[in-house]
Image 1 (cartoon, chains in turn cyan, red):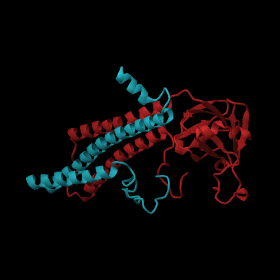
Image 2 (cartoon, helix red, strand yellow):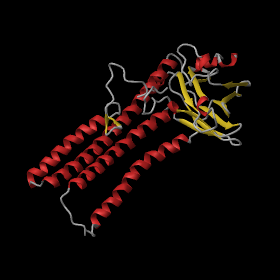
Image 3 (tube, helix red, strand yellow):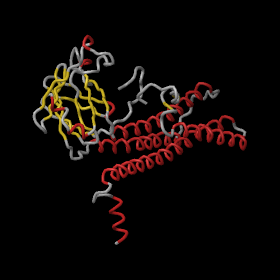
Image 4 (tube, helix red, strand yellow):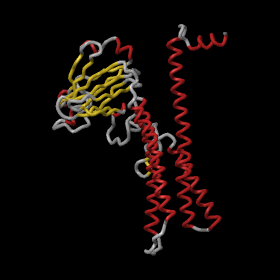
Length: 115
Length: 227
């Protein structure tokens, strides 16, 4: 986000001029599913009712709801993943730092399981 | 540091800034959806053939457009307050640095281990070496360790200033006669730039802040204290 895009990296693509879909985690995924949901809901409504205007309204509503739902779901999983990565990073660091000493987490774990 | 034409936030160098970027993404997605809805409503308004000007009753719609914004505001406020209280946590800092704003330079005091005090002036363009950044580089950087909670005590000797480093998610006003505190923990080494963020006179734009974050082992060897 800080440096200008390198040749291999995805270019910035901003929806409505401000939402950077490529570089914001979960944004592209949510917008795509939202678009799909919008088409399914709007077209489905039209097939059943043949009302164009109302079907467009349903489509827009579907886009907003599906995008929001996918967004929250994806961001929740992303946050969980980041926490797990942080825990893993800390454990690896501890393991490297304390290997062979009395503070070695593996030694403590083996000691408690043998008791 | 920011690159030319950059509009978005800089990459995070502290956990608080990571949280702020996450919150920013969250709020921006909500804003995007609201803008989309408003654009659609505008489009409908401009293309409608309905011309009845005597509509007066719309209880359901009025209920919806009262309750829905309240829900949206709650969805934005809860993570915002969470981060607000997170920034106020003080996690037993290992090091305290004082930063004093002057017109137009910063003074830094490392008083925990000895009495190191120095001024940090912007490098004038004539004194820049190749590779130095114009209007950002300084003669004496603030050298700090990474992965260590650090407390910054910020004040001013004359007028209002503000000590800001965007990549750490820090901006604290330097107010004469008042001591403000901010804490942070940097997660990666590097050189990080900031600029005075409160109008303070003719050279307000020319008193930058430069942090040089180094591994704790190297910091403990004392490069800072051999000046």
